[in-house]
View (cartoon, one colour):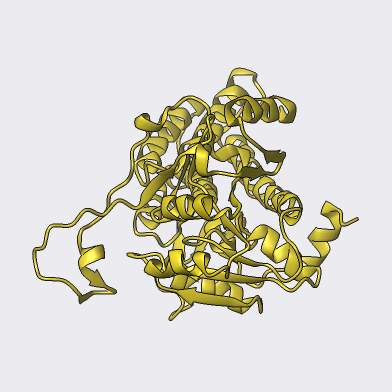
Length: 366
């Protein structure tokens, strides 16, 4: 039987999307907006720069955004040089507001900034730290823990997801829920695929292009090809036919937010895959760490982010529609629980009824 420790030795992705230099106090991000044509890295030294990198989708994907935001909180103290612990908390509160506004749908973002702020408050109140430098050191450790916990969670998801994969399977995904989206090089929806491939199973992926930012064609295909995992690119509009023709054994997608009742918020196009999979009897799995769960909101409470109309009117700056045409550009949709076969987390697989079983899993993990 394969263990978590085994996976740490055999699953070795080539891409390193997020790097922290502890000596220079610089966060370095692989610029995903330039992939696959340019392999550029950008340095981030302030929370404002971290927020802008998130807004411009130089870093994207809920877990990767969370990791970036946690280091953005660290950088707020390093760049501002507060004179006291009291000033430090004020600076962290301002940084949290700046970072939280970058992408409203991804719950990992506000979760990570909250963890950083609350751990700071707690350490100060308990007298665990006496200086700003000690607080910075504490937050560096906390940010690294968020990264390390994410990496371990993804490997665990890979193990649980492996239970849903057979040798020779072809899996349909959506957008990019691989190592680029999580910052670790492993991924959520792609974690079981990476594990299966590392264990020598014959596995392949079908990736829809994912308009308008083309994360499927630019990113998912790029990272899978980099690691020699077979992948086929299709147009978004080919999803139904591909599933109808029996070319897909299961659907595995990531998530930017999952509600306690099983509503899955993910990149636009996911709902369509869920409905078609349900109609054709194809299993549909959402994979995400427990930090992605939102146990407070209802489906109608969640803000669906809308982005610039020119993202739809153009492709990489080239016009493809009449100038000035009206555009609706939501970048996420919501898949109701009736279309979700199971949710795969680092703590285990959650089956319907989701509200009961997700809360049971969370309490077990705590």
